[in-house]
Length: 148
Image (spheres, one colour):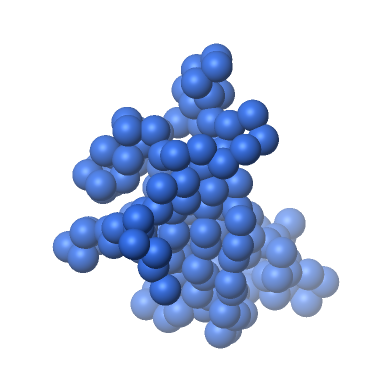
């Protein structure tokens, strides 16, 4: 459910895609991806999504008093199928809605076209330990979509 202040992302926007390979370190003793590894894959997908928007974490941190960061406020995961050691995976990330101080994203982890994990992520924009309104420059980049 969206609050009145939230705006849906453009429906024409294609999700950003980040490809990766499953390594031994991502798996349990049986060669199946350990459940916590999916969180790292999703984080990398969100980071690369932001990078494609022209938003780099280092640049944000170096803004001095105007610096901010992203904090996962809520996440829902739906594990459908397991990934295995050496699989090639893709993480798709899209903006579902933009609120005053938060961003809701949808993510998928796929093997080929097969859905392995679905995720809904609510990200808070935080400065000095408190939520802040999305900076105008961030809002503009989110609305424009990734340049892949």
